[in-house]
Amino acid sequence: AQSVTQLGSHVSVSEGALVLLRCNYSSSVPPYLFWYVQYPNQGLQLLLKYTTGATLVKGINGFEAEFKKSETSFHLTKPSAHMSDAAEYFCAVRSNTGTASKLTFGTGTRLQVTL
Amino acid sequence: GAGVSQSPSNKVTEKGKDVELRCDPISGHTALYWYRQSLGQGLEFLIYFQGNSAPDKSGLPSDRFSAERTGGSVSTLTIQRTQQEDSAVYLCASSKWTGPNAFFGQGTRLTVV
Image (tube, rainbow over all chains, first blue to last red; front, side, top):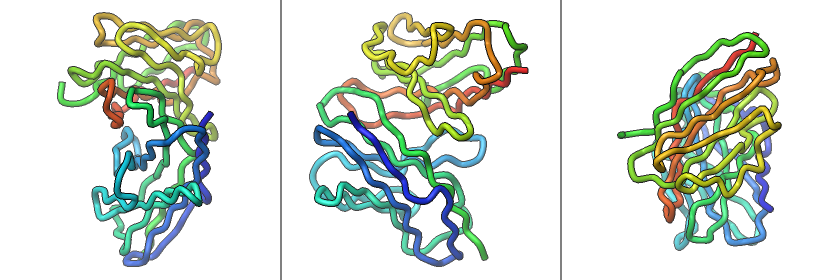
């Protein structure tokens, strides 16, 4: 069984400030981990993913995340927030078994960016 | 196609009617997933297809919900005798069988009145 916990359903930061969105996961098998972003009335867009190898992964729009197995975490960060980053962010996990399987999502974090 | 295509983008239906939602995955993607996104419920997994078979349909909330996939491509999610609690955005995603990335469509917003 797998699960994802996203701490904070709403996060507000000032433009130019650090963005930190928290994600912890539970998985009985090695995981693949993902961050997706959803803009209003849009589908989900993949920001970045961890599969194997380097634990610090970089994604689009200046975001990055670090896989920490000991902490079962995959927190998303961006050094400097931009107004266009305002959206809902979802962390997701799926099994790393080499073949397709369902994604299990967290409940999402809505990021607000203020001037 | 270039991306996952879902139709219709919006659907308003009367309580008790049946609805069909369509998903056209990315060409060559053998895995297809349906999710439901509703306020307060987050993203719920409904069903997953590998080719035309559904090895995991554990998320279908009731027997009013069914899905099929033909030719290893297009999938249809059918909701019979719709209820107001079925109102949600239904998202479809597809992936390669051995690839980790799932690509999502824009969703179908279903409103049951």
